[in-house]
Picture 1: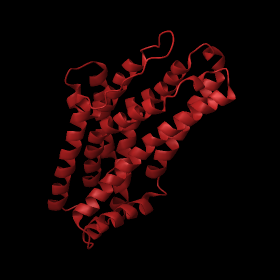
Picture 2: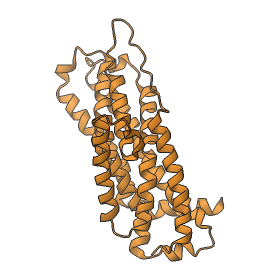
Picture 3: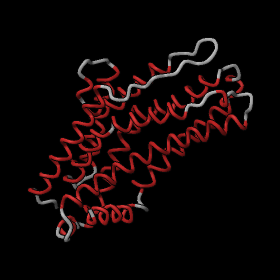
Picture 4: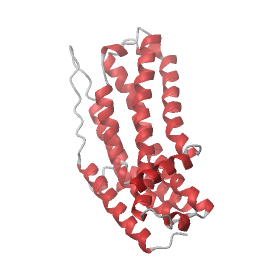
Length: 270
């Protein structure tokens, strides 16, 4: 356990000034800020919208942009950035020769990459709520204060996080074994486009392809968000987190993580 903690802390110090780390922070801030400006400029057209629909439009736009292409490609970038330092410095053999188990080193790197993805999605929740409430303060005629979307938003992003674990495991292993950035990036990009096409075309077995999971999640969320509230109190939107694509994503994440560890044990990582 001590070796794992030391390895995890080392990953933070090695990457805290890299684009891999800061992209997890800057991306949610920049995207939410741009949407805030857009909603502020067209606020006159939203005066008659109820609070629930304002929140669903504001957060739904961000979710749609994230789940289609940005999140999968961000995962590709994060997975490589965690391993790129060792590739560039050629310190893999030195790293695995330390008096720390290979399992501790491998799992610390993987969980640090997972942490960066979780951090990014958590900041999306935080900034969405912050900028939405700021809109309500700056434009009191917009009825953001009528509805509290915090609980729903956390469940949606948690499901999006779970849907990304299969991709993360695959890209982490590819970036661990491939020194060249273009190879895992190319595989990730082509697979992401394929996943989006399979999901949007409604292929019945798309849930078995991990790169389609974020898009499937967004499509499920979109169906729930089109349930417009009737007169009176708005009805609750139930989010079924553990759908079949989520179970497949978790299964792939576990299997690839275990397979990757045994590959690392037997393969000389250059």
